[in-house]
Length: 133
Length: 141
Image (cartoon, rainbow over all chains, first blue to last red; front, side, top):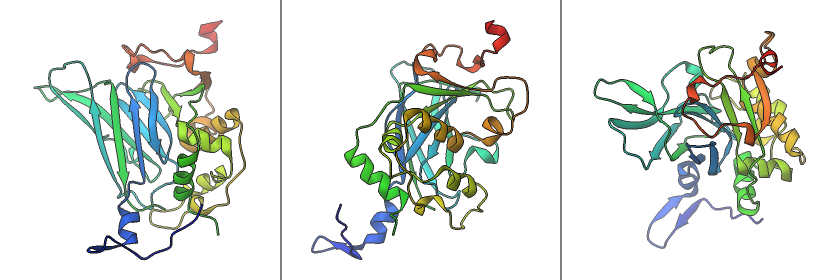
């Protein structure tokens, strides 16, 4: 594989430093099914996914981040209609729920009384940006 | 100079077909006794890299990096890659990487808290997912 070693990239009008492109790229992402037997559909930079329980997952990174201030963006989709608001987001819990090498996330339905109940849905997605170790 | 692990993974994904493992790892976290059994699902692209070789770093680099404070240089990204693994070796590597040592190394209780099982043994009906526990040998006998 050949390597293009340049400091900037330009389209003839606008120029951007290569570091912006590299640093702005997602460092890991995962797309997986959340019903039946959990399986990863596609991914980058993920070594494994832990099914912790209903709607509760941990993504493990092959190449870890430098610090825990990286970001995770999550989303989910489903076929069945469920009352309440569905929210797939970073899990709230002990400090071990998110480290430089893993990110725990929960898909929950929040009903009118603000109860949070785990929910399995068809597809879930997560993208991670930040500085690598 | 060895390329960063992230670059090696990008390059590997561009040329290797993903491999869906025939194994899953069931485990219970002794620090969270009220939680249901967990299931570790190997990533297909990661498994392809493990089987190919010359991409992933030695497992002990990850273990040492667990002790490195945030923001300090870590060893695993630039460590010299290891050779090809069998699928079984890759699962063992993944256990040591993705599961807390409190489960696979330090636990001294009597319960069986970790099992490597064929994927067919994982129930596909998740109705009572939060009640899953690992069957104990005396329950099976």
